Image 1 (tube, rainbow, N blue to C red):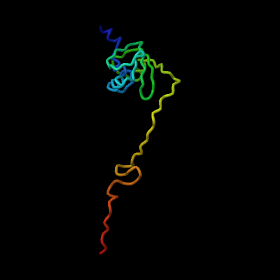
Image 2 (cartoon, rainbow, N blue to C red):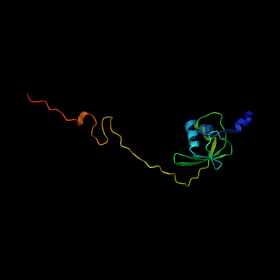
Image 3 (cartoon, rainbow, N blue to C red):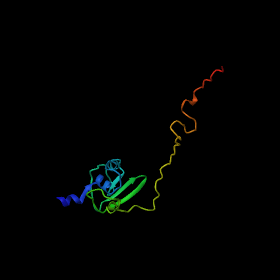
Image 4 (cartoon, helix red, strand yellow):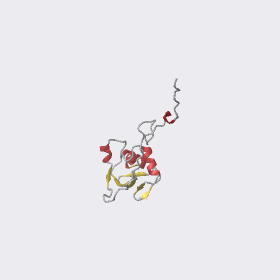
Length: 132
């Protein structure tokens, strides 16, 4: 039974162990969003079992990654160990989707607007002292 447990692993755990996602929760959200295919079929269940030889197609960070699972890990290891869990067979000729770059100017400090004017009491009318 223990040998059989090592043959297959939950997809969300494998994505996390292979360092495709930073957390297991992010792996679950990625799967549930429909961005992961196993052997060409879209998967929405995070508990789908995968093993060596399975092919994964993942749309992540505006990039298409095609991976072939080589091994299963019992725990999450270093990036070097994680790289041995899969073979990246992503097509190299496809241009990456470029996400639009939006830049929002940030104020220099909390009381200053982006146009340089201040939000504080400077906009209030000032009272001049009567001349005595």
